[in-house]
Length: 627
Image (cartoon, rainbow, N blue to C red; front, top):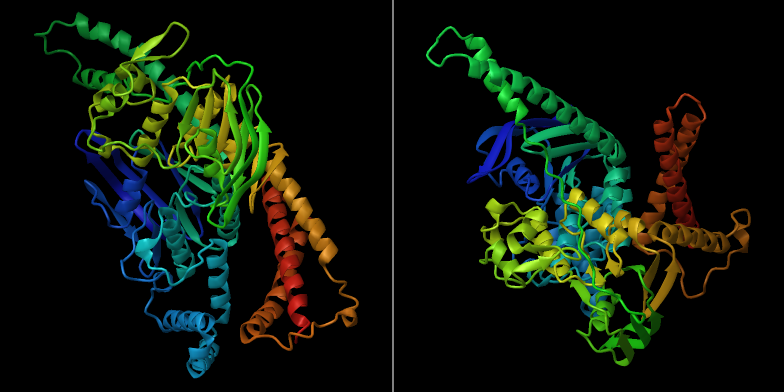
């Protein structure tokens, strides 16, 4: 069943053509990733789909009755509304009742003496009548996983990251038929990303998503749309399949272009031999000549250049941190942390938002003083610090002037210097765009310009705080290659697991309450270790099911709350369904008729079902003690 159809869409801004006569459709149940270079028109295409922008030609059509939700890259809310009003914004009776119930619960928690018990009871009765408890549990889970804490906070006071998380939660709560997400993982920490990845992979929904997170893309999406050189290309498969088929397509295109060029040389000679005044030339052959000329001059895709910057010489002493402590008011973020960096060391930093990752970077670069401890830097060390907040410049400046304000020429190698214009061209800012104002750049292009300003100073110790946000996949691949061969030291804070796995030797894990753990290995190694530890803890804590009489009820709790009772009843219905689905999946795995790809897909589903069933059974046992 077709949910969406784009027909012959074209869009350009002034002389810049984004796409021309592109057509594509999205069917019920498809989970599609849209990828393209920065500035190619991904967000413009999504805005056109949602009637927030107008195409030069062509049209978009959604199937009648299909509800659509759109997560913008930079969401905006109506000022004066609270978070809970924004999350539960619908006017249907279920949404209104849920909103009133959540607001009343908040009043009871905040001031129980002045709470209206009769109103709460009436709302709970209404929730019963509407069978709304399962939906309320789901809302609570989404809010909890995305760490939305103050439901009564005014939306205009939210930070950029909080705004993105509230907008994402609102879309997941709405349960639209067709969900469109523009960079959904930006402003999420790794724990949130992994939860969202699992959630979207398990849900039966139709999805179109722009993302540069390659692990996320691989897990969630089963098709890829690539917007390139104004055309659209479709690939049915994961990211690895896309890379293989893209290379085949480009190789075939180059071969066809080369073939056309060889033939064009012969036809050009024929054209030159014919007298200009003679009209006996074959008109068909002349027309064919012009078509051939167009094919022979077909423009190939400009891939980002390999980065060949030379870092400054590095002495024996690099960077030494001794007993660093830092707190803000009563919030301890770093406690007694020491580390001595070695040459060519590459360190990743992970941890939940607000645990002190950026604080450590600012202490290292002397932008912030520790409360206690010392930072000692070698005489030869030159830091290059890429801030999470991006480039702070006048949006009305020209791109070329941003670089010239730092240096007129830039050292690219031992004896190689590039003038500013050539340096920008090398970083894929064509000469004809260098006099454009910064405000005209896309988010990814601004990030790439910022990266230029950091690397042009030839640092030998790079500190990158969320460098992957808004960068396209092609630029990320080139940046990864450069950093892998970088002769200096590297510290990188990122939520891009693919990026971390390809680069780092070990990881600083910010565990909260000031504790920083040094883990030997990349992010996947860390996650595997963490998963094994959790399984062991659950195994040790899980009560023996065959001896329910051995449980001892705590004296202080007499019975389940109303919400817990509803949760218990929901679990009793969900567990048998999960058991049946698990058995069916196992039976499918044992048929011996599955392809390797399908077997891998079904095996992953079985593992997810097993994990979910184990968690629900454990929760059921906890609640059953009070029934």
